[in-house]
Image (cartoon, rainbow, N blue to C red; front, side):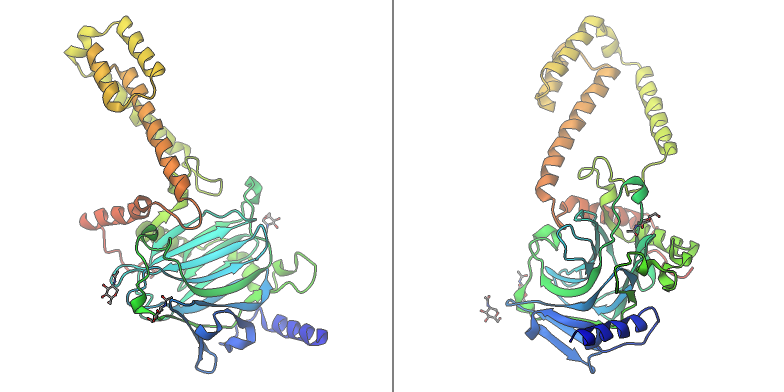
Length: 408
Ligand SMILES: *[C@@H]1O[C@H](CO)[C@@H](O)[C@H](O)[C@H]1NC(C)=O
Ligand SMILES: *[C@@H]1O[C@H](CO)[C@@H](O)[C@H](O)[C@H]1NC(C)=O
Ligand SMILES: *[C@@H]1O[C@H](CO)[C@@H](O)[C@H](O)[C@H]1NC(C)=O
């Protein structure tokens, strides 16, 4: 038995690292759950997972991997698939697990399916990004890929990079390093997946069916203890060509972010007032611009004559207001306004203080709701649709539809 397993290892190692043609499901994968909801088609070149009110189903790779260019061709459940989640991911199954996720969140017929990606490293996740696709993913098979080497992790849709997670261990961001299994599944996520869990699975449309192809695996399985083995440049995805996006890919990636992204944890301020370290940070230039416009606007406010204000502008009143603001922070905005009206209108300095206080209150409230919503995939509906709204505005202004972005 041992010998058999060893030779199986050797065969897979020999075959990995080269671009092979489609293999049968059984060569590299096995059914992990929902056995009676799995159908093998076309001599194992295609697998159908189905979900009804009794079960979903899933499959996984026989081996674990430490680097590679993993792919599956997937056709998603069609028609009304609200609440139904189709997933393709790598996971380490450890306590502090590493995981790289594609999660397709179904929707009511005619409404767009969301592709959510996430990256876990050493158990730390909460890095959701969401996009809408530029095609109907239920109409045909499309290729979804995850490239993982020492330098970057890139998620691709039909060879278009849609997400990049760089190795930033130099600034303290833990990078996925544990051996991971490739998995795919179809399951009921109607507690969170569609409209934040408000849109439920309509079981009268069951069974839901997802189809998978492309069962050859392009990856390095750690056959021995040498941690560096799977980082060898003899595997083509480790070569420097794959250390960062080339300029064409960079343009495609920016196009996706610009035109198809509906949510990015990096720009979710209520959830992360300080963006996590791996997120791009605003450049000093932007700070300067913001500071500059603030100075200009406050200067303008100062110079706009306001007789009512001027008449009562004395130091005593100022002190009274400052005291009021400091001593009664729990006053509602309306009450504060009334109290201040009783004394005299606001000065510029007071107004700034006033608005900071209001902002702080708002932030606190948002933080509280976000805390409640936190956890895998639970994103406030407002956040989810902010990106959509932005795109709608742009559409009205005539910037959309964007060109099919992916010719160079
Ligand atoms: C599941 O669906 C079947 C067929 O629609 C129905 O007969 C059955 O009662 C349902 N079971 C549950 C637990 O909802
Ligand atoms: C991340 O990059 C550093 C330095 O480039 C490297 O030493 C380390 O092995 C990489 N981490 C992983 C998990 O690949
Ligand atoms: C579920 O689908 C059926 C059949 O299309 C439809 O009649 C019903 O109204 C749907 N239920 C909900 C809650 O949308």
